[in-house]
Image (cartoon, rainbow, N blue to C red; front, side):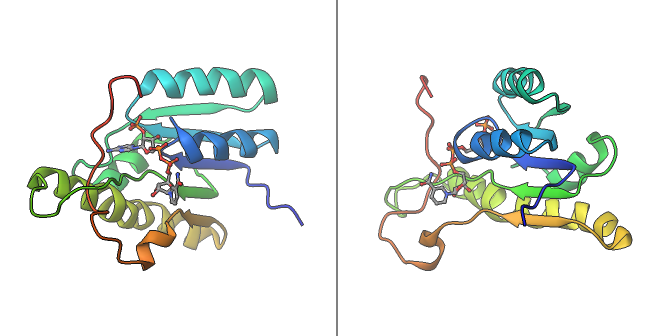
Length: 159
Ligand SMILES: NC(=O)c1ccc[n+]([C@@H]2O[C@H](COP(=O)([O-])OP(=O)(O)OC[C@H]3O[C@@H](n4cnc5c(N)ncnc54)[C@H](OP(=O)(O)O)[C@@H]3O)[C@@H](O)[C@H]2O)c1
């Protein structure tokens, strides 16, 4: 059986795995809510998927490292979603001792706090409807202590 949600919200949809998931879900006919900071990339993806698969795509440009990102997202998304994909994440290598404290805060905010807050914001409606799915994208590195794998990637200008 193939799971096909009618409307899916994907964080980190502007690149990588999030973009790939958005394409696969649109291909199956799911409407989408695309979330990330780079609005231009989200809008390009929304246009592409709306044309190719006749789905509707809502774009929400949001920095998930901000205060209460889940509540902010819930307030900005119109209507219900039946799949939430917590995919946005940041990671990189470096020395913990030399790491910038603000970078460490950002990793915790995006990779952990935002995920919890988004679940907390979207689960009540799903529970009330007794239907809905949350997919939390993690990494095997979450279970492996890897020296120097710790801190936010400084995005190259070309990325
Ligand atoms: N690629 C791998 O090999 C791999 C392996 C294991 C697990 N994962 C996990 O899979 C997920 C996606 O990885 P990926 O490789 O596809 O990453 P990626 O290509 O670097 O994309 C990361 C996504 O997260 C978004 N993002 C980052 N910071 C954000 C913020 N503050 N607010 C909102 N959105 C933010 C980025 O969008 P903007 O920059 O536009 O905001 C982008 O859409 C991550 O959780 C990662 O840990 C990846």
